[in-house]
Length: 216
Length: 216
DNA sequence: CGGTTGCGGTAACACTTGTTCACTGACTTC
DNA sequence: GAAGTCAGTGAACAAGTGTTACCGCAACCG
Image (cartoon, rainbow over all chains, first blue to last red):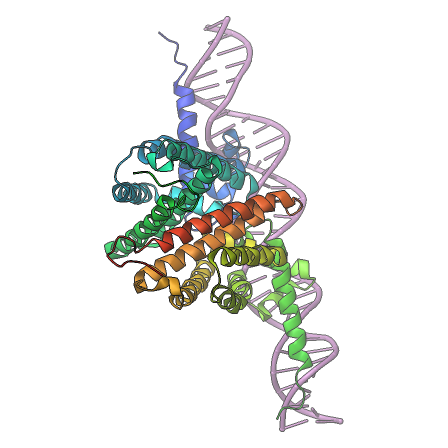
């Protein structure tokens, strides 16, 4: 009926999203710690003071950006790391996934890579928290894998951490590769595949000297 | 021959160094792209305009900082990676080296980790260049290693890259570990050692399936 | 319908910023 | 010892910054 609890909140969400988008674009050429509140509102086309209706500060906006960039990635991870398959094939799939994600959301990836060690504490911590969740999830996924039989919890987590860090490295390599040059991207893919393969080989022989005769 | 060795140039170098030191300290809490020229001169205690006698801009100072932080590290790498020894021992030595370096120059390490993907292009490129030199050097060191017999140039470089990236990851982990808590540092050391060990295992079995019977 | 909520706008505040210019005065050179 | 170099000064500039208080007006609720 006449009850429309939506139209107002919808407008608010819209300009909030506009702020996030504008900030993300501005952040392609600078770090968050130098991004100005006025700069963002100017890009959106609203008054500086309207900013406070959505975020307490630029830091706050940064934390929201972290959520936007990384929050929706968890299911993606689970559904890609979990399914079994021949090692080589899983590697190719993971790399393809990363490349596709960087292509689809380059600004988000750049933002994360930049602010992971950046100058704004709350943002840094938000990223670390999300990455910690990733490693935990990857660790769980690895635990349910046949090749992880006999692995200690500790070792599984260190391997997961290795994988997560490697993901980020590969993603930022794709960022640096000029988007126009397919051969540069191909080079990145090749090196990344080899590195993952080497890690995989290490994983297969990890328990070799511990008395446990490696299965099959 | 010149008459005076240069009490004047010495003074200049001194304030130049003071500028670098002050900037580095200020950069512990923010990124380079938000560091102001006046902020630095204020910290040193000189007039803002005097800054231009030493650097064209803050970017320029940043590039100089990269040189200061990474330039002197090349010999250190060579003398630590090259000498042979049992795998486990080399790993321990490498980790100890990194931990010691982070302890001795935390601000430098933080600066590099932060600006590696930071918002200032010339600085980013200067860092990438130095890191590329590192990988090349590590690659050469690896080439002269008995365990690298039969390895292609390409594979050696990808392994070197893996090691260099791992170094940086470990360094930044030490940074994040509270300096006051030895058990946190110990945890970092343990995980780092395991990761390097896993990479090492992968390295030993890298050529297993290629027909070359990797025997000693 | 009348009253309240709340997004966005305007004006102003007290600073801070990079850069210029002409200058001083200790060191350097002839 | 005179002449010149040049690190550092001080004032002034045109912008830029975050933040406050207040207003208007459309959307909401009873």
